[in-house]
Image (tube, rainbow, N blue to C red; front, side):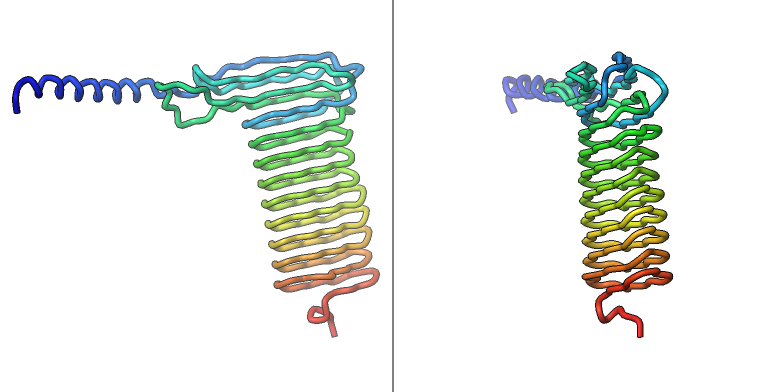
Length: 276
């Protein structure tokens, strides 16, 4: 090979190696920063939160402010949106983190924002969440959640309305409860009103409800105990186990066993599951 060809080839290889090395060196690690936002809430009725990826923790307290502590994990070129503003009688919280575009950014981690929010315990909550766990406690008003993915845990609240794509749901308390869930386990106890659950897949366990219970389930086991009203279950597949209710109606049980006991009221189940 001629020397005239060797020199350009050597330069090209060196440049390629340098770019690979520098690219690895420039691989961004997520950097942490923290911001705190506050808004006077003495005349506000609701918090409307639209958040992206990250953990969301909301706690009610005997205060007259909305306080947001945001832990932001980002790279140098991340696009961050974080704001808390008043709109009419609502506090509007927006939080989102997106990866920016860069030729030299090779980060394998996506940016996200973890939020800890403290609100007056009488404040109504309207939440639209992209992904990440949600935990709510000590709030006495209605809670409405539209969630893409991630676990949901609620302790307390009044009327609860949950639309969830995927992830476990764990509820303790509430009055009237409505759940529309794509996939993931559901556990609910100590609701003070009627409960309605529409579930695609995942186990369901409900106990100690002071109203009627209606379940439409695609697949997964269903366990129900200590319901003060009528229980109605439409099930595609999975075992059904019911005890201590004021009535039982199973129009469709699909595949899976059906067991019931201590039913103090009318019983209607598919013929193949009737007791002789």
